[in-house]
Image (cartoon, rainbow over all chains, first blue to last red; front, side):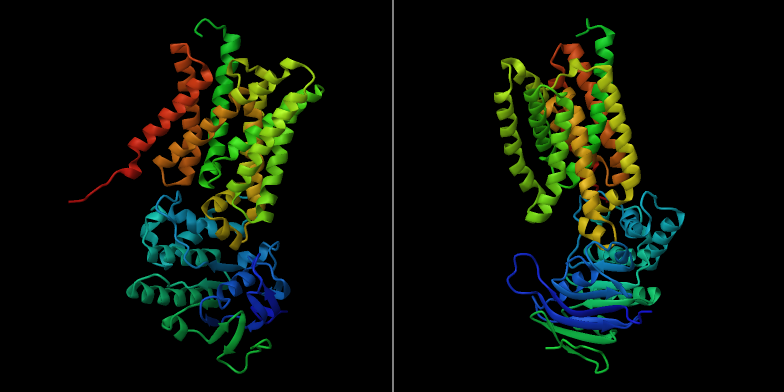
Length: 237
Length: 274
């Protein structure tokens, strides 16, 4: 039985056409239920780290496991356990989707092939929207919401998905200070509600970093430091 | 055209309405995924296939047209993924290639008049629709319904955002390929009725018009085929009334519906509360 939520062993990853690997020999072990922050300058490999854990970017070498199961671009079932909120994902005003459907769609990876969403899926989505204070927007077009409201809807997706692992890429970027604070508190609430393991990329210090159990610093595709001595980081430096 | 007997008018009407529904339904995917040239590429692939069938003169051009359209559909997805280019770029590269193939096949065809058969696929022959073609179109409509029932939630997630769909465990690549195949099948079976040029109008305009009226994809999924059927019927009546070529009348009706939708779209209204 795997006692780790996320395990990366000597992972090298690169985007196509890149001469240099974006991740170089990364080792990481995150126990379940912990919240870790990832910081570092632009191009350090923070987003790549999340995409590798989610299987969106195949590794060149090394192993990635989530909840003891191997992650790869063809292993779709493990992704239904992982909620990934990409950086700067904003829906343009003409997006033809209602908020309730955007949240409901987060559960589709869990629904078996050929089946349609059922009553439980819809209730779960409604509850998720209520939890992030967006129940009022249920039947609103998602593209008509503000940036901060759209971020809340994406967090509601994580709740609706009942994810075990949360990967959030700069969840408070491009928001005004009040919305940043509001959203940071909400991220912590969502994580607590799900009792999930969270890996949060953040450029700036603030409540998200403060609430994290550990903080990873990345630079040039490697983990340069972790703020706790008892965590295995074989590939540091 | 009022003087035409019912055994010609009825299959024409039914075929036109079915093609209107099918093409505009596929148009939702094409418009939402910014693949507006897909219908064009598929129709030219089908044209090349039909020319190939006529050149060999042993196969029904419909089946070779469908084989070529499916071949292109089967190639487009993996090619886009492998080349890491926009699908529209790959489609743009496919289009002249299949067009050139079609012209070469016509050139190599054994008899001089054979090119006209293939060219019918570019211009269409709405009045030449038979009841067996209506049956084939009905079967295609049934197939579309079954496939969308099976892949419905995956298609829905991919239309929202392909990356987000993949991230939540939906097999977005497979879903994208399924969409390409559905478009290919619909284009190939509709081509003889509408022609490659009209199919573009029926695929893009009613779906684009539907996007002007609603923010809810579920409504658009109903509205687009309704507008497709409406445009086809309007074109059919216009052709009967003014004695115009039916294909051109349908394209004209599609354009009218599209521009009227832009003009009266509630999305463009500014509501100012005082």
